[in-house]
Length: 181
Image 1 (cartoon, rainbow, N blue to C red):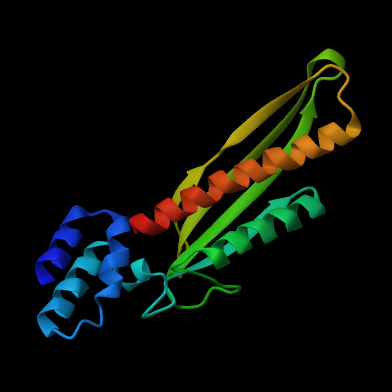
Image 2 (tube, rainbow, N blue to C red):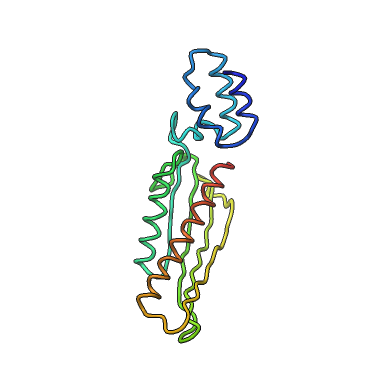
């Protein structure tokens, strides 16, 4: 069991965390120590989905000129964080380590008639807490061509879908950063 735990740690693949986590309470002390070292190489106890600690603390802040859109993206990102094993949503920044995700959302309509298209973009920044050290930025964007004579309901629905898709991209980038840290 210790040799298997060591080999899983050497793989460097986060998928190895699940079997390692199940061995943390093994009856053999040598196995438990080996599991601990292997988990450390995969991000520590946070790799076990918060077991043994709260995992990565995440604060989400969203801005948009459209208050309804801002609230929807905020709820969506917070829900994704809450459901993600190894992540804990926080409201306020304290002295503990964590991550802050800041997102600015923009969407609009370009053209009219035969060439109507919906556009959306998110400017995201990731900060390490508590010092708020900037660790990364990205600007995913999308454009959805709607063709001729797009109805107002088609335009509104397409804007919502465009923003939803980018929200998933932003969250995936946050998870990738959290796993690397």
